[in-house]
Length: 258
Length: 193
Image (tube, rainbow over all chains, first blue to last red; front, side, top):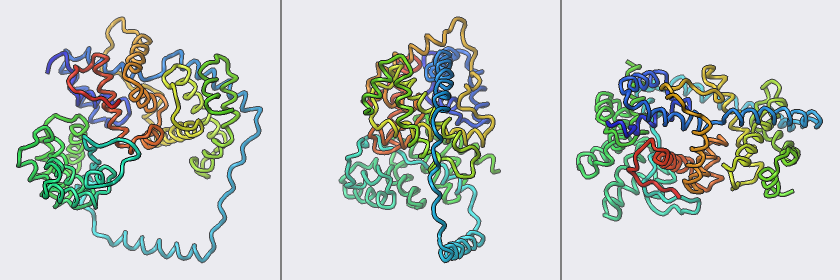
């Protein structure tokens, strides 16, 4: 670490702090690290002022807002109130009875369902779609193959399509990463684990190791293999600040379950 | 009066007549949208709350147009007003759930500011650097930070494939802003423009 560079993960944490999305534990951890690296104070300050001053209104803007509030308040007082939209008509009693019956069925299923493993629930909550690096942007793109299916998050179709396209040599094997993510999104953690383990062991994509390990960790969690998941999350190289942050928070939440 | 004419009026005239024109034109549909679709019927003082949300949305829009941070709108004015007002309501709800969180209050600084640092100079410098990033990044950052829109709306009005794409590109734009502002060294080439 040099005083000329603020680690990307730290920058991501500072941004999360100003967005109100950093947990108190993560904030305390960040402050502790900052205290141990006084040589980074100047850079941290510059990063902070982006959010504190650069991306927030100054006193002049706040004063103008207040003036406009008063000005528009006077205008509003001279205007008639807007009528609220009419309430929807009450549905017939017959439909209410059908709805109540359905509700009872759902309630019975909810009460009788097997208890969910809390670690598997954490894995589901921590899952987020991983954008492909060369994904096309624009509303006009058409869904054509496994990659575009993945881009529009149609995971159930994307995961087998990507696997077949890699197997046939149509696309590069790095797409097994997206196949693994899609398998997780399609609630197929065993398939995700197999795909991602093979990819990790191939050693061909060291620059994507963080993403591979993160989603492999989620697959292990969904399968109830907590120790294996923790191992993957702890081994995450510091390549992607968002993933690093997510892995750290997931580890903290796992610890809190113990 | 067309949206283009209203926007030009907001941008070019220093008086409040242009703001009043927008207020009068979009007040009723925006209040109906808020009362009918956003604020639940059981909420107290719905009409007053809707007026407050609409007023705040208009003020934010005016502020960004007049400051030059927002040079063009890629959707109708009422789309923006509705979306900004809806997001303000969501933030109010979050503040009710998390009393320690206030979107209008800055959290405590992480490090002590050095002597002589001037917030207004910083603000101007960041805005200048944002303008230098190019139109795509400038629009994206302004929509997120200054209009405070949600990702689904940003993706819709700026033409991104989905919210995740818009978010990914915003991260790239912020990385470029950090490099330009001297927080990060220029190591990666991220150019969403």
